[in-house]
Image (cartoon, rainbow, N blue to C red; front, side):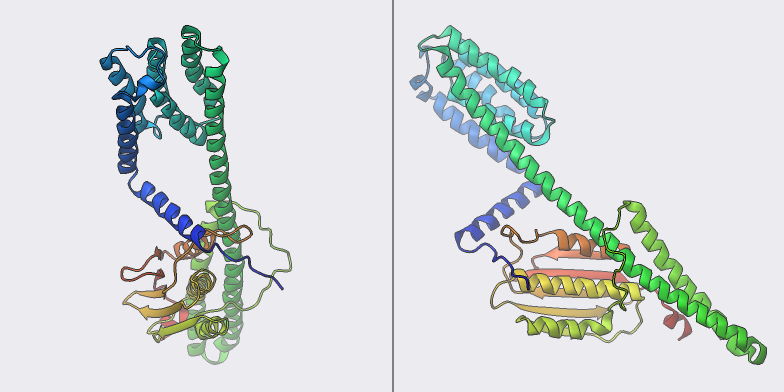
Length: 408
């Protein structure tokens, strides 16, 4: 018996949701975010340049125009901190050198920590050595030129501050790479699972072909019409098996992975659309209220497509059960268009949140569902619904003919 670690509750949940929304906003509008951040720090630096800089200056008589120019050199390059962090740091280091030589000792020089963070986050480790080569000369120059105290009192604390920022960037980078690796492993595991399931489907089709061929051989002598029907069924079934095989090879060709499944993997019949009611009943038994609107099929779907619809419904309902919270409800609809089938699962919960330690990370299930949809040239949309709160998963698959369609 396994127990699930409860997810984040209370203020931490709202903090995580706020961070997730800010990251999503940053990815959607990076230039707007860069402009806002640069403008904010530039304004703060200009406020200090209006007179506050004299509180830390070694020479309070520095010309105002030089203070203003140096302040802008130390703040405006932040706009390029992500795209060209090393170039931004080089320009800012020049401003820091002028600040140190003149005796202004502008506090805006500490803004160099921001491009240092991005260098540690996105550049090779050796880039940090070049960063140190840019940061150290202004510190040493200021300490030697204005010896109000021992030089190390000015240099060492600043170097520690930059080192801590660099370590923070390395930590965030390691965490990001770990998440990307988890997503890649989840995709590889899902491809292996799809391959095993497709093996069962293709094996079933080939067994049908063998049986039809044997029956047609005996019927050819006594009833040529029945033999022709058997040949037609063999043709349609073999075409379906060939289509499934091509999709399978496309998945395996995309990325070669070694399957970690045991040799005695289950070979039970794979579920299809007829098993959706049983799936819903199981979820209801677990405590989730589910409403269903399952239209009758005007055309048959291939076994692989049915399996895709079933797995997406299973994943969506399971996520709702785990993440939607108490009192949430779910609605599952299955509709058929002229040449497609659409599955929609909507809930009234709070949507996905970052998990607590020990829980599966969000996004791995979405990776698996997208892999399945792409296998059948379908689309998968996940996100908040257009109206109201909650979460919605929408799968659309084109209709692929089956032998039943050909013989009807």
